[in-house]
Image 1 (cartoon, rainbow, N blue to C red):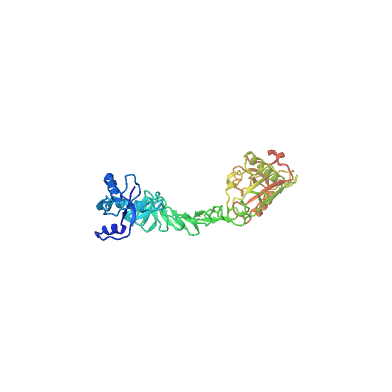
Image 2 (image 1 turned 135 degrees about the vertical axis):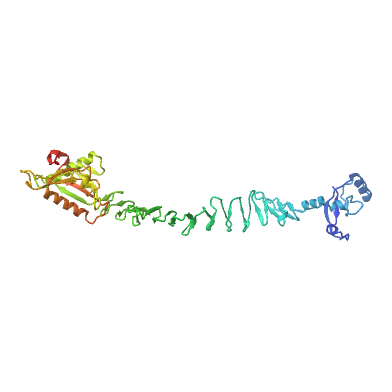
Length: 410
């Protein structure tokens, strides 16, 4: 290959129709239209034989050049010039510049910028991936069709178009929680600040996601004092334990999930005025067991206070229209003989377990009043839902028979 010497500044000036030549030169490869004629001229000019392979530099315009000036200045030659002058680190010619390795896309329409292969879409101020365009208010960010530009370097998808600080996107109709930058809330929700939210009519409880319903007295109270805090919602009159709730006036058991409730004892004394009263309780307990009522054993039951105005008495055989013990007295030979007999029921009418399933008997009015007084003192000042244990002592209730008490009038 013969190296032709051209005049670089001469090329530049020829591009401007200036035929003035400079003495500066660089070497570029030439393209020989007639190799044989060029070789002959080469031999004549150099005085060498055909076997002489030493290179000869010839200036453009010389008879030895063999290259027309208009072709050197043509588009193809300029492109060839560009390719030959881009360094290996920037091998891609682009509008008078060279694009680096990894950015082969030339963006002539955007001031000669270069785009990478993974972002080949030329934009006014940068490059975007295929199928995306530049955000109008953020030249650093590209968006896909349907996305919202957030102006902070991020975008939001069509199903969560509300831009929020921290590049968080929220659904339409929601806002970012001010105390939790990772969560969005609707209008009827409140942010709890611990990674969860609650309805506006409930209260946030602890850090575990409990929402205490302020409109429901059974779960309106948050228990913040348990150790560790189990985020438990209890009733307004309940006792907060370690992750569970106990009834009013009870205490937390050392056994998880259990409560220590107060106990009302009916002690049995043989051949006493209260014997029939206690025996009727035993028969009532037996019926509760037969009905599979929870928390009932032969001599004990956990009762729940119904609250003021219980209708249970009128649901039992002690109701006023039944006239269970009307005109009756305690038979002769029994403790309290001659006393007026009144209707007694178990479970008591003040308990939620009472009513239609209660066992009834006619007992001494004095004994009935004494039992009622004990019950009244137990539930006095308490709220509905208060729990206590009724316990019979002094007798094994499984030994009591129906014939041991006096039933209702036929």
